Image (cartoon, rainbow, N blue to C red):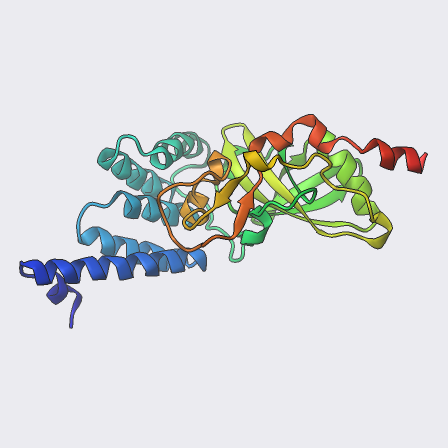
Length: 288
């Protein structure tokens, strides 16, 4: 049965068939985005829009175009999403960001590199092992044009600085108050992974996760101030590929994609206060 034959005609039966087709296409679009197959994601969301106006499909299509380096097309579809839903935060926020990027980078930029997305586990809270940080000495707007929430970040010591690399380029360095403690722990054998949680015109924020603790660092906590349980927001289904999607709002929930189910809790933004990265007195005293 052809795609057109599924959607031609009228009546309850056809409406049910169209609803099923939409559901299937949404699932396929999410799967393509999860696999970072942005060309396929764009194609599927375009098919969805052939079935009628759809704010979420417009946002997903805009995201796919952005990952493909098609900034002008991405803005066009975010604008379409906002026209359908003037309260849509995802579309509004990204239109504002693209306005700056289009002025700096032009209508097109390089596509995202395969494997540029961070594993979901990086964004899951684990007491003492995860914390947020801002990047300083940022790359240019043109270089940041292809960096998005959810992208993996590699942290590399560079003298007294902790360099952050994403999509194959240095995007900044970790703010000194966080870097100082982590550099010491890295030198003693710890390993860390990171991912982008939000970007602004002059701001990039990442989440950092301890993925290996060297035995000599036993008892030393990477992020001493634990998140308060009352502050944690549960990760329920539908939070990551969606503009990665609301990682830009401290990983808060939104109503789009459904590729992730019940994977735990995410650290709140306020754990980035200075005390979250201060060295524990007991550790420092023992070493003196």
